[in-house]
Amino acid sequence: MKILVLGAGVVGTTTAYFLAKDGHEVTVLDRQTGPGLETSFANGGQISAGHAKPWAEPRMPLQALLWTFQADAPLLFRPWRWDPSLWSWGLKFLRNCTNERTRINMDRTLRVALYSRSVLKALRQHTRVKYNQTTKGILHIYRTGEEFKRGRAAAEKLSALGLPQDILTVNDCVKLEPALNHAASIDLAGGILSNDDESGDAHLFTKEIAKLAVELGVEFRFDSTIENLKTSGQRISGIITNQGQLAADAFVLALGSYTPHLTEPLGLKLPIYPAKGYSISIELKNPDNAPTISVTDENRFMVFSRLGNVLRVAGTAELAGWDSALREVRVEALKRNAQYLFPDASSYADLSPWCGLRAATPDSVPILGETPYENLFLNTGHGTLGWTMACGSARVIADLISGREPEIDLSGLTIKRFASS
Image (cartoon, rainbow, N blue to C red; front, side, top):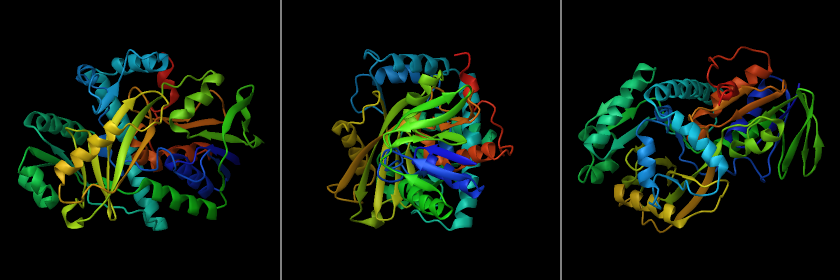
């Protein structure tokens, strides 16, 4: 079957690889000059099933309101902006801020994350792909006793859903990661270890998988701007790009935050809104004083991943539309917290800032699978967990297109859950 995959980020590229493994003729289109150059380029680097807890939870509306006037807040939105897309998304978000919806959405997100983690492990064993991976788990640290209490409660819920985690004392945290010794002497309250989570360079992974895909016959067409989809009845007949028209038997949309721009003219209104995330990549001057295990600061909503001789620090979410401009105040927040936790790891003078638009759904659950158009498939809406869910989501799409039953239940993961909203 001839298949067009739209988007060459970590999700689209991995999808193309699995489709090619199934024997399909695959072409990938992307407006950039290479794979993984937008949201996948410099993310936090975590394969984090432990982050399956959705943003929408009972205490988030008040917390988000308190953050409204804080320029470097972990989650920043300005509700007074003229932005109907944000208002519509925000109302759906609020409807998910109940205990029951939080439990349901956590279950759905964790289902994909755990499956994807297992698919990645099998892929790594089969291909021996290297991407500065670290398989020591992810350590979640807490600054206050109250936050630690909430973290333990969330860990119990995740454990009941199939993700066991270890509760650690401050001494346990320092023993596991000696670079936290400075933080422990100031305000560390405890930690939670997600043993089977991982970290690695998503951009490097995407490039390596793209190479493997090319070896399987996949064609990548870069500098290709996708303008719109052509329809014929309930099928997609082709696409129009800046380089001309293309036809295929099936189409996969893996365009992240930009997916709704193509689906809305088709009558498919996807509740996806960009959550701009920031990162800095820091050259390590004193590697022995930098973390070797990936760390999540739960109080600051920031993550730290060791990628060779670079420390990747990422976090925050800014709901400001499709604006990709980098705001210095949010970069400084990342730098300030990195210096606070790991003061001797670097001079913090040589760093590379970045921001990218993550495709967020109001329930933090991706949108996978079939659409009302019989040959159009969605692989989008992964939010902050695109790298975490990439391999599993790709395998699901390849199974569907190849006529196989996916290995996980897709209930609650498809576009159908938004039919009445």
